[in-house]
Length: 163
Figure 1 (cartoon, rainbow, N blue to C red):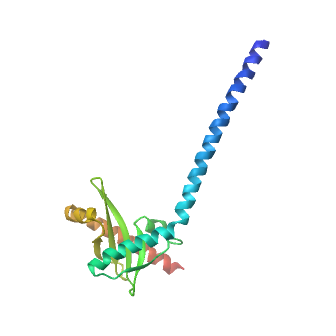
Figure 2: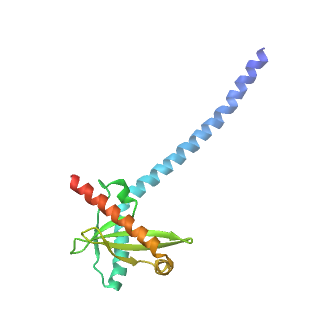
Figure 3: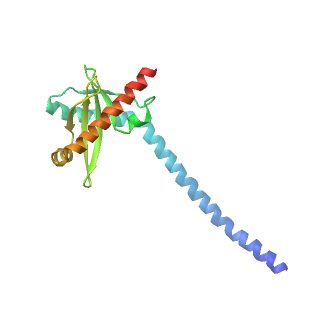
């Protein structure tokens, strides 16, 4: 049976480069994913600043108060962050939330102004798609999003009271 051992050895020699190449490919892929994750995490303040700047441009057209700073997600309950990105409003106790609605293959970006009592005062469309979407969305869908924002705000307030 010396021929059988020789065949096993040759098969092992052939698999070794394949496994090595596959391992290198996986390492490169995971390294790129890790790099992308770090870039996403560490550029969040820059992305938030750009978002505030563009939202404030739209708010100046509506004559509304401007957004000031991001309410950082660190320490916020997880469900509260699923609704959108929270901001505080300049010279007010109100908060603003930027969120999106996807409908018929289009994304509409909205800003909800939340009163200190936790109620949504106004919903402002921030893009042309959002303006068109607002006209066509059923009232029940808008109430659903408003309720989701109000619940998210209640989670944030409950999290602050625990501290």
